[in-house]
Image (cartoon, rainbow, N blue to C red; front, side, top):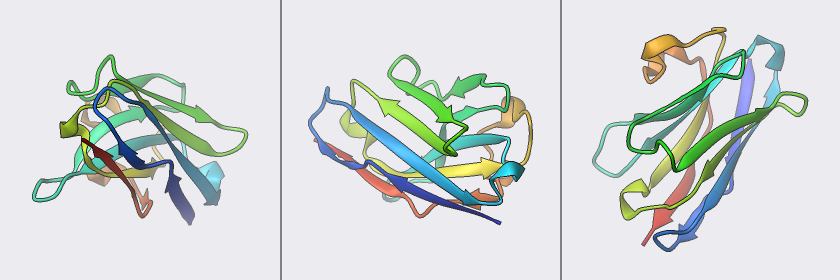
Length: 125
């Protein structure tokens, strides 16, 4: 079993930046790919970005060029650098872990992931 804890959320003005972190613990050797998701009030959860075991990454069109996903394997930590934030980026952000080595084109589907964090709130005004 894997536990995930997000941090780094907060309130920021439009155009600002935040860096989210997700610390993994437990059976971390079972994690091969990870992702970030977000959910705004009244909206469905959506995939933001994902990183495969080989380090390749993919992004939702809405965040391409502004967000960067990365991971520190040695410290079992996932990051999401968010730049040029917009009010529409306001949401609860969740990290998720997958046992798959490669998430493929359906990386944004929740059923690809087996462990989820509790979320960290990002508010952009």
